[in-house]
Image (cartoon, rainbow, N blue to C red; front, side, top):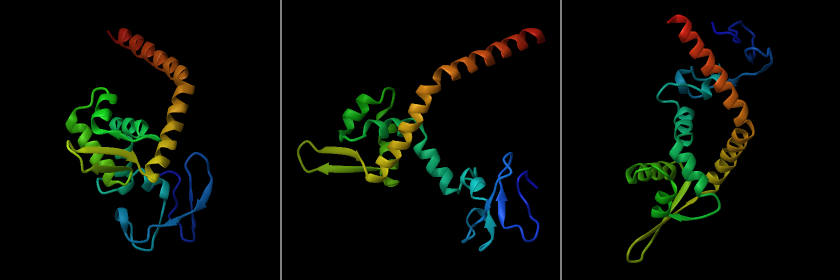
Length: 170
């Protein structure tokens, strides 16, 4: 049995590892993620489920990849054409940008508008849902900017330790 869980009869909550805090368990309901319908399950564990069929994991994989993050950031409060996006996203291929935009559109994060003109014009913009994700991305960028020096120092310490350990083993 994993740390922080209890299978005892009458246990009505989930104890978070390392904190000892117990909160009510949430029903899994429909048997998703291999759960028994009507059974209680730990939401925190399910949200990071690595199984291929996990919706949360699929969504996280989509919105957290570098191309999606860049596209969402670029579309904040503006509409861009495909060629403008391609020019702005350094290093992305035309095919990868097409795939990324289609996936974001499918997930309801980006709206694609085709204008009936010659030559055809296609614009991309964030949907209201995509705009809410942009706020989350901005918070992550802000955190990164605020802590980049600490991270750089931690990396330097780690690299020195690894280098020194490698020299001792030689």
